[in-house]
Amino acid sequence: MNPDRVALIVDEPIPGHYYWILQRQDGAACRAVAAAEGPLPSHGLALMAGTTALQRRLSSRVLDRRPLPPVLDFEQPRIDFAPTSLQ
Image 1 (cartoon, rainbow, N blue to C red):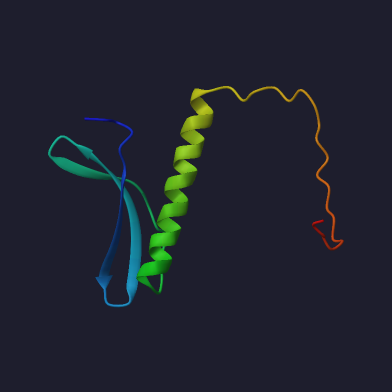
Image 2: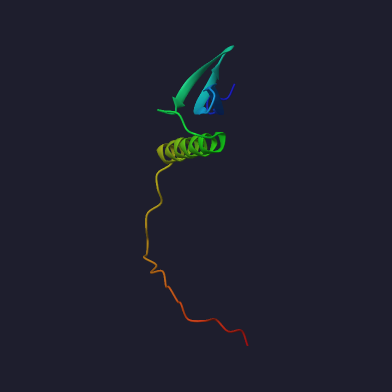
């Protein structure tokens, strides 16, 4: 069993009230790792909110494992609103 495996579940316990739940399997049972604080009005919104929570969880775990590389130089982004022409 991989301890990093987390499933995203969208539940509708009451019609029109959707909750996202991140859960991990512990042996034969599943336990919630994180969940929505309140209901969302649609399945799609609950799925998007749960996906965002899952991505944040993943990025925080990755950042905890590896040190960030040092910044060696600064690159200034350039914004050009002039029309581009190809010749």
